[in-house]
Image (cartoon, rainbow, N blue to C red):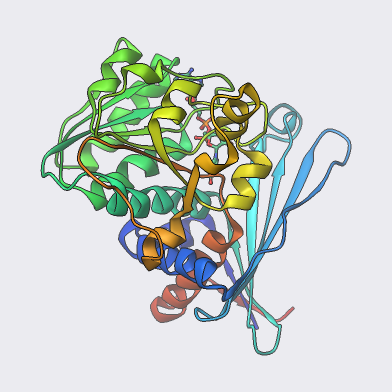
Length: 325
Ligand SMILES: NC(=O)c1ccc[n+]([C@@H]2O[C@H](COP(=O)([O-])OP(=O)(O)OC[C@H]3O[C@@H](n4cnc5c(N)ncnc54)[C@H](O)[C@@H]3O)[C@@H](O)[C@H]2O)c1
């Protein structure tokens, strides 16, 4: 039997707190060598892009593949979103597909969870820190909730080129957190923050990295192609650079690759994978003056770990629809 879980089913069982535990374990498995993470496969049918992201986590017994599609004409042609995703979870012992679930909300939570885990390991320890989020779209919401899970925040400041989007963000997030969420009129105001998340669709740097304060932690989750970046060379050069995976960063992350191409840094500037910090094989922040930077490209291990968590919670709660395929 296969369990079908809709977006609202996934939303009803998946919390950021639990997802951060699962994602932390997944990154640790990747670092210890008990995860299998083949490269993402891409197919381009006319008018769209279809991505296939498989992963297996041995210790967590999680085997899954996510199918993500990006079809720009979808809203006009079919009233579908541009980006859609579904996750197919298997029983690693029999190979049987035990669950098919919506992947949209799951992706946002697992992406937030990676930033939350990175923040927990890398940001300064002080209470009452200020967070800032560039972008107020789908991912940005979960970035703020994850950072709030990792540190006690006193305030959050957000900026988006779309004021409408920023207003909707505040209306949705303010009731969910215990600190004020404010909209900045100038993106430079966000550089006062202790923890900065960048979660935009921009392909060019969002701010002048030379103005970032010492001690800041940054989660960069947006751009993920070799020629696009949200973070400038000055910031990357000043930062201790931690990625979700070396392979993904050197394959996809313009934030790292452009400064290397410019000759501003060398390959050796890549300091560690997040999993190496979690397992303790590499040390994290060295002092309160250092700028730490986590670059997230998004890995299928995050999806597999989160899908397993969602499936187990759904079975316990008795939600979803069982079908005999
Ligand atoms: N790292 C990961 O695992 C991961 C996972 C999913 C999505 N992403 C990426 O995250 C980014 C955001 O995705 P989303 O789903 O939230 O998109 P979205 O379209 O919902 O939101 C993007 C927001 O960025 C804003 N924006 C664009 N340029 C800006 C700028 N210069 N300054 C401030 N705001 C700006 C837009 O107005 C929009 O509100 C995309 O690049 C996406 O590919 C990364």
